[in-house]
Length: 154
Image (cartoon, rainbow, N blue to C red; front, side, top):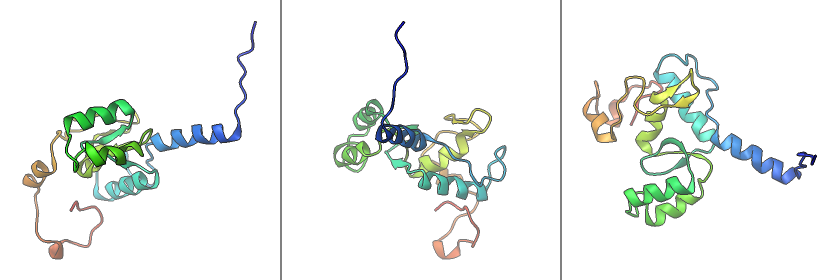
């Protein structure tokens, strides 16, 4: 019977561990995983930044694969969307979680703490774009009127 043992070189091990970290959803510092609140939204965004989440148009926390990148580029072919030059940028995100501007907020809203994953359309937060969300805000104003409170979305 042949042994299934395989030895990893240190560099190979580091790459493997980095790919796991790049896909990690960190909830470090989040105070209440069962509710959604402004302070935890701030922590979510800080953790996404610290874990190197990338930017892909229409992303909301998916792992970026070549198939996903090709799909997004075909759906949104513009240079300022997911095609053209942005696809080249996206290739640097392979293996990492990716979001767009509103996708970062949606990833937090859709995060299911029990399952440890982002479930699109969950937690009573519909799938909508930035303009739709803007039309539903309770308070709005210029940056100069923004309260000095962590978490308001700009």
